[in-house]
Image (cartoon, rainbow, N blue to C red; front, side, top):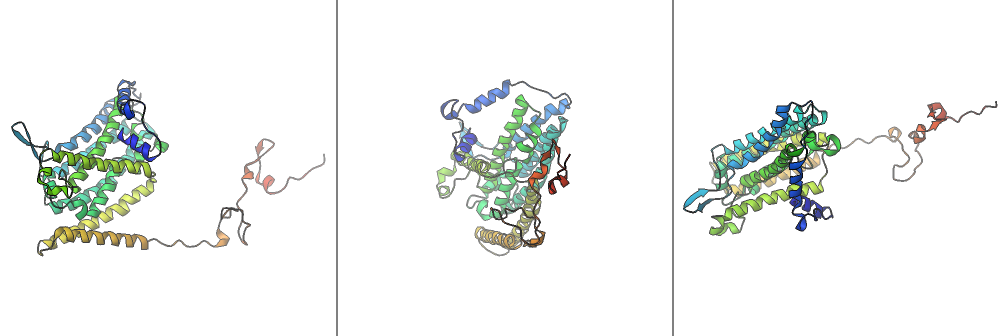
Length: 399
């Protein structure tokens, strides 16, 4: 409901406004429709995998929150407990592994239908995850270096004074771009491009099997937002300057800040969907392999070097890394602006002349050959006219 109303506002239309106050019941109506919709099975499908694939996608989506700390220790009655289901020294690796496991649900769903368009969507999705999860992982490694741990609770504790989003700003930008590609959202929704492959791997699914895929997509949006909050936005810590107030960083307040930060990232993804167009597939792959991967790797090497220097020289780590990050981004912008090759001008004699070069009819210059007229497709006496009949006038005969 939030996304549909938000898109409506951004695109100057009302959005859902009939079912209930402000259209609040529209989402429940859609969910009920999926529950009672006819459950169709394709005849040629691998029935076991066809049924299992949506369950794998949904299971992987819901499993990520097991290691996300949503707040500090709170008291429930007489029991003090952290707002985290489980913590482990390699919790961040668990998140990346579960995210990769969810890909199997998409690939198996596209392959098991034995249909062309779902298979195309599955192949696109696998290529997309491989291309962007590598850049995402490299961006998170710099967070591990700064925090000294891969435990999510330890990473949040290390951001008590400074958030890594500002200290490691290039890594934060790389993560945000990769996260949008990870969850198949515009402008990276190529596995589900409606104009090309209908609904991608979900094309042959209906009823709640389709609903599990649809639900897993939105849960994955919450997942990448929660990971961004944990790794870069201080987790459940209050934003500055409220972070200096002691009681706002304790108890149930932490859960409030955590969910507000999650919805900030959710709003960014809704905003990009409303404003940006879908990338072409070659542009999408070039961005992942030729832009994000080298930048993420270069930034990781730079962070490792500076981190090593700070072990021997007493320097203000946040200020130092912030300065290095700004210089790194400036260098990237300079390289991007100056590295564009100048296109070689085409001689006037070799240009294809259409007659409307400047938006209005212009006579051809010496050496230019006008493009053949569209009337070349005209028919003479119900048959396709030969080139000779169009290029030269028809000779009249007296009979």
